[in-house]
Amino acid sequence: MNKKIRHIIMALLLVVFCTAGGVIFFTYQKYEQEDRVYEQAAEAYTRPVTDGGGFGTSDASGLPTGAEAVEEAETLNGWAGAPLEVDFPRLREVNGDVVGWIYCEGTVINYPVLQGEDNDYYLHRNMNRQTHNAGSIFVDAANQPGFGDSNTIIYGHHMKNGSMFASLDEWAEQEYYEEHPVMWLLTPQQNYRILLFAGYTTSAASDTYTIFPDSCDELEEYLKQCMEKSDFEADFNMTGPDAREEISLSRNDQYVVLSTCAYSFQDARYVLHGKLVPVP
Image (cartoon, rainbow, N blue to C red):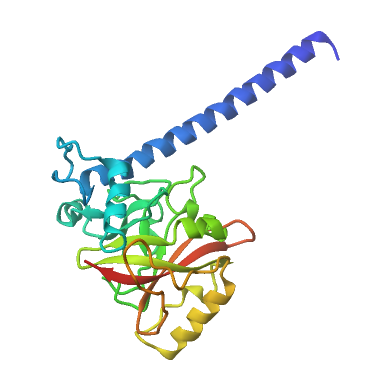
């Protein structure tokens, strides 16, 4: 191979390398820009319960703010009440499809929850109805509004940068579950603790996505099967810092299924099941 050909090959390789690097750079830059939509929403429409200021304001009282304040709120409240407060009237002025807010301390999960007329609309649209790779966290269109079904299905993308519901499969590890046994679901009507009790990989076409009528007999068998498939063992004597209660599962309770893509086989999904416990 003569010197001229080697130079041509090196030049082509350099072009390919630079192009690939540019694509990766701009892709992650776009991810960061899209993440800021939800970061700004959290700043504008939520505040820790320890923060004495109004929504979207800085706290001049010396109280901790942001993630530090949320952590303090959880420490002070235990499980007695939600660590966040959401300004739903203002948030719903931006988008009337907002039905709640989901939050998990120590993770990136801190997002508005929407519900569209079908399951395609918010797949690649954000809360501002703008085209968005990460889409939104959204409730299955077949569910009743207001989380009134026995089990409500909530979807979120598994983003490569770790945002949205990408962290759900972390619960496959027992230690991770023990560090994060609880999430929060806040709605305009009622706030809930989500007591997680099962997580596993399943198919997008599986019975996991069955929506049951209220208090039906089939729900108890469904819950039993979820427990049998779970990657982690739920602590049914879990009390938390202040709340003295055991996790018990009954067909009279309400549940959520949190779902995201998984990649262990075609059309795989990772799901978390949680019991909704109303809180003040």
